[in-house]
Image (cartoon, rainbow, N blue to C red; front, side, top):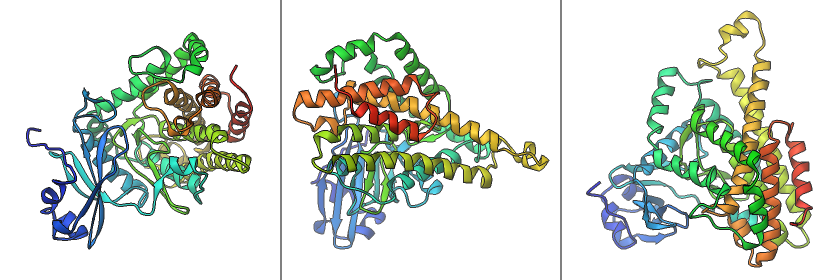
Length: 416
C-alpha cells in the first residue's frame, strides 16, 4: 500500500474529481465542492462531499484504530471487506444499505450514497425519537442476510468461496474476539469502567460459570461459519428518519452464527431502554415501553421472514426438500429447532454485548452521555446484571414476552 495517502478536506476534491462516479454525482468542477469531515466512529475517516449536482459520502480506512491512534495499527483491507459485505447485503435485502458508487482498494475508500435526512439511531433513541417500522425493517434485514448468506440458500461452491474470502478479515475478528468476549471478564489493558461499578465488576469477574459461558459463546463466534454477518450491528450502525431505516458500516463482516447480529442489536436496544431514566422526564414509561416493543417487533419480524424464506428459498444443502417435502414430510419441526437455536445464541451474544459496552474499550453514548457518575453507575449496574442473567439463562428464556418481562424487572432494581 505504498501509494496509499489519507484524504483530508483540502486534498479530497482534487484527488477524487477525476473519478466519473464521483464527478457525475457531485459536479465536474472540484472548486464547487464542499467537503466536511464527519467521522465520529472508532476507526475511519468519513467525509460529506456536496456539490451543485448532489452529495455523496466518502469513507476511507486509516492504517490504525482512530479511537486509539497509530499505536494500534490496523490493515487497510477492512475497506475491502466492507465493500464486499455491502454488495452482498444489497443483493440479499435490496434498499436497506447505502448504494456503493465507487471502490478503490489501494486507497481503501468507498464512495456511497449520502443518507439524508437520516440520523444515527442511537442519538435518536437518546433524544426520545421514534421510527415507524424500525423493528420490522431490522428484523427482516437480519433474517434475509442470515438466510440468504447461508447453506440454507447458497450453492455450496459459492458459500465456501465466500467464507474463505471473509476469513481474511482477521484483524477485525480479533478485535471482537478480544474486546467483546474476553476483555470484559478480566482487567485488560484498554478496559475502563465507572468506579461506582467496582464491587459489581469484581463480583462478575469472580464468577467462573459466567466466564465459561462467555467463552462458549466465543467458540460459537469463532467456529460456526453459518452465514455472512454484519459483525457490528448496533444502534450506531443504523440510520433512520421518522419512517425509514437503513444499515451502515459492515466492515466487521465475517461468516459466523446466525444469532450474532440480531443478538448484538437487541443488546443495544436493551441498553437504550435501561439508560432512559437519565434521559426522559414525564414520558419515560411510555418511551421505554416503545423501545421494548421494537425488541419484540425485531424478533417477530426476523422469525416471520426467516420462516417465509425457509418455505420459498431453501435451495442449499441443508434440510433439502428431497428429505422432507418431496416425501410428503413437513420440515416445520426442523424450522422450529433452528429458530430456537438462533434465539438462544442471540440471547447469549446479547448478554456479552451488554457487558463489553460497559467494561471494555468502546462504550455506548446511551450511558456515557449521562454526566452524573453515580446515576450512571446505577443504570449501568442494571445493565450488567441483566446481561449476566441473559447469558446464563439463554436456553430457558422462551420468547420475547419473557425477555421483556425480565428486562422490566431489572429496570426496577438499584445497584447494591
